[in-house]
Length: 116
Image (tube, rainbow, N blue to C red):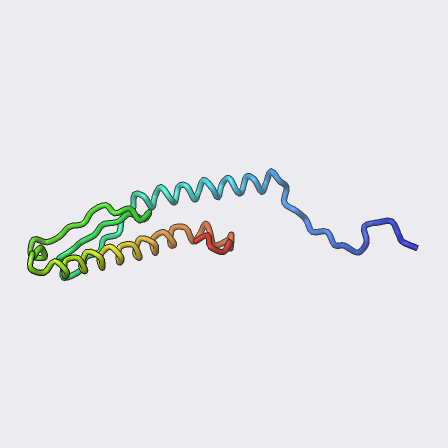
């Protein structure tokens, strides 16, 4: 009654394990290189007409905060705090954008949710 055999399953060619592993290793090396480059590249944000300037790497490492002497008014510390906060947040956003631009060619083909 039953037949011996593989049934009606279709077989699709599979990449060889060695070939796939080599591609994964190449992608991993490229991603490491991109991460290293992001650590060297910086974004600069200036707010308040140059009152506060922030420099951050593509890895979201804060490199410097420069505050103009004119912005250091002891009577208006709240404004200075707001300027610093705004500058840091804008620098982080620019840094993330830079990282996405650098990593997109590498991660785009993977289509793994949550990777970037």
